[in-house]
Image (cartoon, rainbow, N blue to C red; front, side):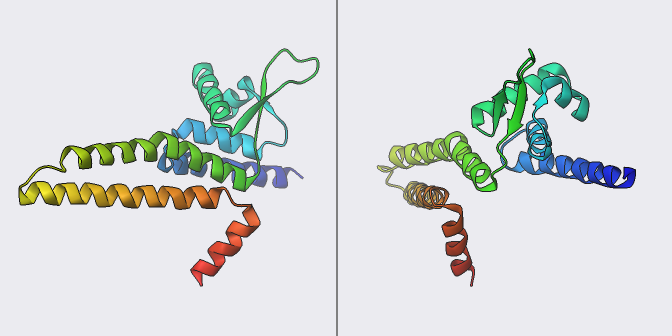
Amino acid sequence: MKIGVDKLQAARDEFVGQWGALGTQWGINRTMAQIHALLITAPEPMSTDDVMEALEVSRGNAHTNLKELVAWGLVRSVVKKGQRREFFEADKDVWHIFTTVARERKRREIEPAIHVLSKCAKETEDIGSKEGKDFHEQMRELEEFVAFASKVADKISGMKHGFAVQLAAKLLK
């Protein structure tokens, strides 16, 4: 039985480490992503102390990242009867995790990018030089493309999981 427990812990540790690295690609700091991975794989809700011990992070780091995960909607606070401590559990629905991360990334990254592209296009629309016209056109085309991609992502994330997978399968044929 000990071998199975050790193998499970090793696999979980590997997942938590890799999810942390992957999270940095999604615009989430490594510790936040590692805490998320830890909670996704936890059989029971975990306290801040549990997270601190498992990941060897400070109380402040654990607390700040748990609150951020709650704000994102990826983790929820759980009250356990007879316990004064706060516990946390992750939403384990993969599609919901994807749509939540997509929504947050859009709000934090895509919408500001569209705003900058729009502003740059508007501020350069009356420049008469070739360089100015080329720059304006590039900004306008980028804004149009990023806005289109954002709308596509909104449509996909608004679909039911099964339908989105079927649609993606058809597009990938």
